[in-house]
Amino acid sequence: MSVTANKGEHSETLVFLRILHEGTVRVADKLGEPGQSRLKVAAVQRPSDPGMKFNIKDEMIHVEDVAGKEMAVVPRQAVKVLADNLYDQIVCSKGASFICSASDDAFELLRLVGAKAASTSKSDLHLDVCSPVFEGELYSLGFSVKSELGGLPTLLNAGATQFQYRVEDCPAEDALAVQEAAPRSSGKDYPGPMRLLPALNHSHARVVFESVVNPIFEQNLKMIDTTFPRILASTLQHAYMRGDLSLEEAVQCPALLDDLSEVLSLPRPMVIRLVRHKMKELLRQSALGMNPGRQWEGQTEAHGGWLVVKEDGSVVCFHVINDDDFRDYLLANTKFDTPSMSRHEAGYLYRQEGDAKARLRLSLQVRFK
Image 1 (cartoon, rainbow, N blue to C red):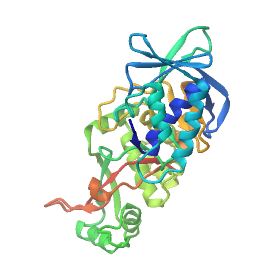
Image 2: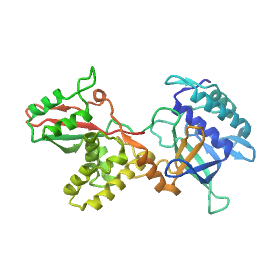
Image 3: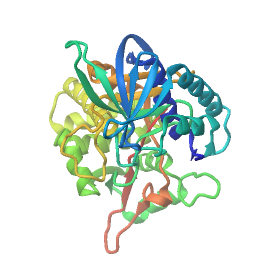
């Protein structure tokens, strides 16, 4: 069977092979670099092959079905060769999707069937990890796989993630005229929020947060904090206003902090801590469990954490034991993205019939930088 996949999907297979060969995973620090600690792995399962388990015993990989019947025994050194070849093929590939012969060889050798985990699953691999405390005890932990080998991965996708704002101190006709006069890229119908918001501010119009469009997403945000919808909407708005979409910079924006201090009736030093902490929590929950369009009960689906393929083909993990490093890493390495205005029908002013105020919707999307 030949598997056609993109770099991220082939990277899931690469991580799987690396862990089978090495039997351990280095734990990353807050910069995403490998630290001294390691997780010792006894077995690996793939959600895309739910009936199979891959046990690491001495120098061999024992492939078993759901009933415990042994399907194959593969030398770990042979898995290393496949992993090295797959890495070379991924980095040399061209096009959005492609076939890697090393991936096909791995599927045949290890009796794999499914190409990737379901898109609704946060866990791409389940690892049986040896307990660092109790000898002989194993923990089955789900991990999400991310790759530095392809394009910049998205952490939080646009769709259900829209905020609605109202333009104050400016009649709708005047606000729409500001939008029409604002500079835009060639062939574009609208200037985009990064040009529109500064233009509105220059005309002394105020853009005021009104609501979260999707009620499920609003409830999910309120699970983090009841004030968080307002905090997040304002952070996104001010990032566009400043023209700097880095999340680490966005949470330090002086105008944002002054605005929230007044709205939330909290002293500024507390607002600084609150915004930073809640933004880290959003990123962490988006990474491990929360889907914006599905009702979220606060559960974590990827209980283990993240497995990250580095540019050199090595694998590191963020685990619950270094949760603070994971949060710091996410905040330092992500940015607000600019999703398609036409696809999501957001990012431009509009006027509802009979309304004297112009309105604006902004779509939230977070991508690694």
